[in-house]
Image (cartoon, rainbow, N blue to C red; front, side, top):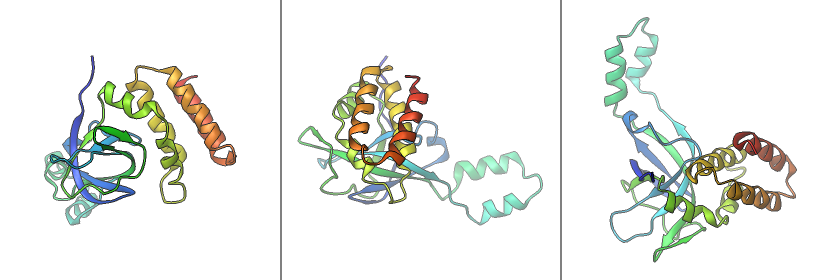
Length: 203
C-alpha cells in the first residue's frame, strides 16, 4: 500500500543551499538522517526538496538542572520533552525544487520562508519521480567540506530510497554506476561509500 507524506515540522530559517526545520518531540518518530523531505508552501511558491543531514537537540536551564538531579521523576522528564519551548532542529541540504509542476535537480531560485510546513516524502510515486533522474547526487557531492557528512548521507539516503522504491535493485545499481562516474577522481570518498552502500543494500 502506498504511503502518504507526513508533515513533521516547519521551517525555522533558510538559504538557497538548505534550511533548518523545527519540530516537537512527538513529531520525531519518522524523519531520520538521510530522509528526503519537502518544504511545501501553502501558496504557489516552489516546493523545495532536501535531505536531512543533521539533527540536534539544544539544552535549556531546566534540562541542565534535571541532568544534575539523582533520580528525576519520569513525569517531569516526559513533561519537559513534550512541552519544551525549544524545538528539535534538523538541518536540510537542498537538492531540488518544483517549477510549473516539473522537478529540477538544482538549487532553488528562492529559499522557503519561515514557518513553511515541511513534509517527509513517503509517497512512492513522488519519491520515484524525484529519484529517477540522478542529477541531484551532484548537489550532495558538492556539499563536501561544508560540514555535511557526504559519504554517510549518501549511504543513508540510498538505503531509505531503496526501501521506499520497494527494493528496486536496478535503481541502486544505477546509483552506484553514477557515483563511480562522479567520484572517479576521489577514491577517498568513493571506496568507503561503495562498500557501505553494498553492505546496507546487501548487493
